[in-house]
Amino acid sequence: MKSTYNLPQLIDNVARLSPDREAFRYLEESISYGELFEKSNQLAFHLVSIGIKKGDRIGVFMNRCLETCIAVYGILKSGAAYVPLDTSAPVVKTISIIKDCEITCLITTTTKRRKVNQLLKEQSSLNIIIGDTIKNTIPSVSWNDIFSTRVGDFVPPPILEQDLAFILYTSGSTGKPKGIMHTHYSALSLSKIASSTYDFNSDDVFGNPAPLHFDPSTFGYFVAPLVGATTVIIPDAHLKMPASLSALIAKEKITVWYSVPLMLIQLLNSGTLGKNDFSSLRWVLFAGEVFITKHLRALMKQWPHARFSNLYGPAELILCTYYHVPEPPINDKPIPIGNVWNNTEYKILDDDNNDVLPGETGQLAIRSATMMQGYWNNKALTEQSFHRVTVADGYDHVYYKTGDLTQLNCNGDLLFLGRNDRQIKLRGYRVELDEIELTLLKYADVEEVAVLVLGKDEETQQLAAVIKPGKDASIKLTHLMEFCKVQLPYYAIPKTIEVMADLPRTSSGKISRKELGKLLEEHHL
Amino acid sequence: MKKKILNYIKANLATESINELDIYENLLESGLVDSIGMIQLVLFIETEAQIKVAPEEMIINNFMTVDHILKFIASKQNSEEKQV
Figure 1 (cartoon, rainbow over the protein chains, first blue to last red):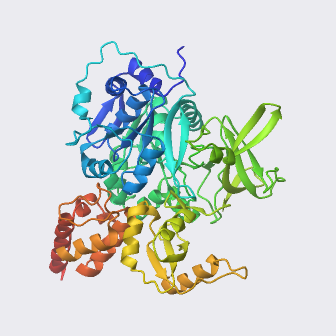
Figure 2 (tube, chains in turn red, brown):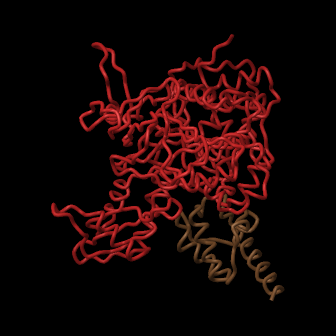
Figure 3 (tube, each protein chain N blue to C red):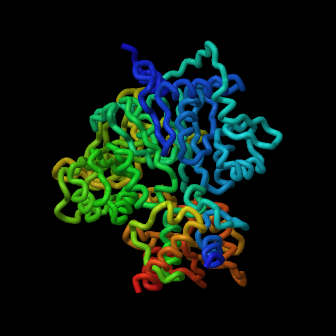
């Protein structure tokens, strides 16, 4: 039996045995495993021919579309690592990522031309565009040119399981982006563990709403191919129009759905669940934030034939625990995040990194095959995020400290109790409140700032900023809002900015966010 | 109505600074308006056009562009007039 130790082999394996099986689908477009093998080979050949070497980083700048899977597998086959870039992020943010990991080659589509041109106006390492021909001084090549390449007897470079596969950027509390490095090994481990946990098979149809820069996309792009299943890439438009999304899930006969809870709540509220046929759905998986129990119960009653599972894991681990919800919860208590899955162990640590007693609250630390290699170009931060248990001199067990507070309940399930810092989840996005505050402070005449989350319900939760202007300064709020749009990703832009002559303080003189929250809630809600 | 909607999107909902917006710009695919923005837009239209948008009417064909939105509003106002 051939062993599988790198990601491109996932496609090769299925393409060899059943080349006609559908690998990815996007609305009316579709690509078989055989075609994906062929086309990713062509892209890899081209990349190698323009001098891309093993370990190089290549940017993927695309909306959800069929070409994403060719880009991912073509890059991986060339020996390079892909760096998915959020196309809706501000230009400065994207450029800082491009610079941080020295991307020279960007893969895109013609629909992103306006934005790509904006990126090219900035100083950076970018010098090759693939996927669109750009009227510019730098070389570019279209997808059609790639697909008419003759690869001959091209042999891709050897790829080891420990080689870098992709870097996922997330916001860092210092304002500098953090690049989470995953290897072929950590991603393949995810594929193996997830498919055995959920018994996925080649008849499954995966619904993949996550964009590439969001770690849940690893399910659609890497778990489904391991079992030879089909992944349906959900278009951007459907994700904003729940009634259309509902119709699409039914039409595509999706069997495995995996998204943040909010998307499921929007489906529930769309008033269409009774009208469409969801009989194919067998697994409803959710992660990324707490699923409010009353909504989960309502959804489980709508889809009694499907099984529901709560997954948990920061992007550094992709995923690590799961909890199969046995039946619609009877009360509104939050459901557990469950227990660690295969090839994974955990500790709950106190502030001094000692194990807490059973039943006590502490920070969750995880050791797993799916763990990241570290943060790109940031050894200090990597080491800071790890908890080392020395087994013998020179041999450590390395745990990732999640920053999430957990507790073991009497059934042996882990409960999620919030964060131990100021990172929050807003509609599934990781948001660092400190980062937003630091950004606002960059604006001239802002002397002090506090950013907080208002609203209890995850659907109505929003960011509010309160600023204290410098002495004799007058701040035009519309200008400040424009500044935010240029500096911050859209989900991190405060919905409201208030000006106060001074901010409420605690007895020690620190800004009292609690008091401020109360003040704002009284005013708005 | 056309101007009001375009101005509202530009001033309140656009996720990037834009100078020009026409009624044929795809609001959903381009990322110009995020999902919360779409909900705000629906509320705005309900107030301005004095119509009620049912959850099952939140479909791509009604909201893809400002042009689609204007046609949707017209058809709603038409059918409501007939009912009266």
